[in-house]
Length: 167
Image 1 (cartoon, rainbow, N blue to C red):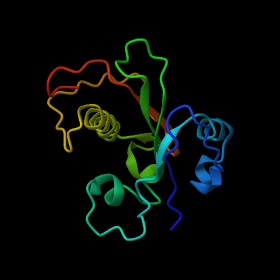
Image 2 (cartoon, rainbow, N blue to C red):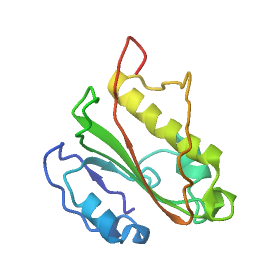
Image 3 (cartoon, one colour):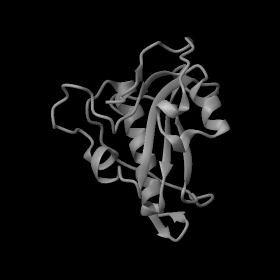
Image 4 (tube, one colour):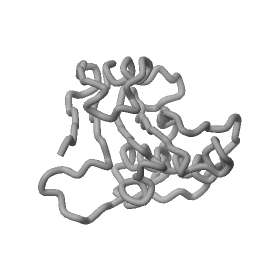
């Protein structure tokens, strides 16, 4: 398995080769991003040796992970400079998308876009609250521009508030 995971902690540089992840990320801005100060690097779709067949997120690790839909994905943490963040780091999600997520030719389906946002905000809520399986109560999406496919998408998420069980 080519599973790669970096547990260096925020602030420690982890040098990687983009091609260790996926050829779609072999472009200058992805190279700079993946060779910056990032931590807890994980490729959710690559199974670890000895990992059983139970998949906690089958939508992203099986159903959408095809050569036509989500061709490659990487998650990691890094320091944030967002002034409204209640913690000093943000979660990041780098995806290579194919036309299998299109609603209109060359554009990702709006429902897919919302699914990505729900995925990353749930991941953040789980991380901040320590809850194993958070649930989205309300999510409002204001679409500003289409996501073109095929293409690479970079998603960032930071926590701005925590009240009781809500993040």
